[in-house]
Image (cartoon, rainbow, N blue to C red; front, side, top):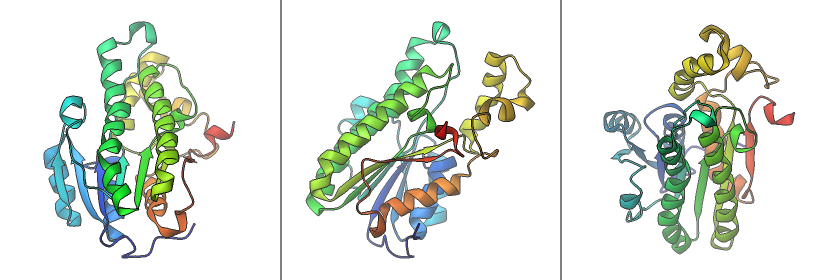
Amino acid sequence: MTQVAHGELDGRRAVVTGGASGIGEACSRALAAAGAHVVIADRDGEGAERVAAAIGGEAWQVDLSDLDALAEVELRADILVNNAGVQTVSPIAEFDPARFRFIVDLMLVSPFLLTRAALPGMYERGWGRIINISSVHGLRASAFKSAYVSAKHGLEGLSKVTALEGGPHGVTSNCINPGYVRTPLVEKQIADQARVHGIPEDEVVERIMLTESAVKRLVEPDEVASLAVWLCGAAAGMVTGSSYSMDGGWSAR
């Protein structure tokens, strides 16, 4: 994979949701290093300000679950990274319906609304990159994650439709599908996974999170970010409608 040259994204404006930590922060830093001006969109305003100050970007404190407000947003972005997400681990029979709706709103409807807001400007300029941080759970299912798996499967479909509509206008749309990434979101799952599977917390990573992976380690946020930046570069101009697995071989089974 050819690396994006320093400065290749000069003049490009990127918006990264969930950019205050984890994968989003790594993507924000990598895009800025390639020359983009990065807007860190996050509910955590202080975290967004911290990352923005470190990379010379700007912070956008926003509640992405407020769909009515998001539907009215005018978004100036050459690059949109739909990354924000949450997780709830629970059997379907016990899954709170309100929580299910919240997760789907945040992780599927919100990316739709942001994409909808960004596309007109991308079309006008004849260039755009939509990068959807999906998951191996956009390709495979796991028990006790009905909302997350449903949202990620939906995001895969949205990304492909965006690719088909955006292609004639110079806009590409792709998914990145990591396995378990070393982020606060994954760390918070350990207690829930231990509870629903009836095992000690110190056994969750090996017995649950890495059981399907041929490479027995967590994905690092910087690895995901490197692929996201490559998808923005000139070498990836013909890459669209694709889903890039970064799961240590999980989805090869």
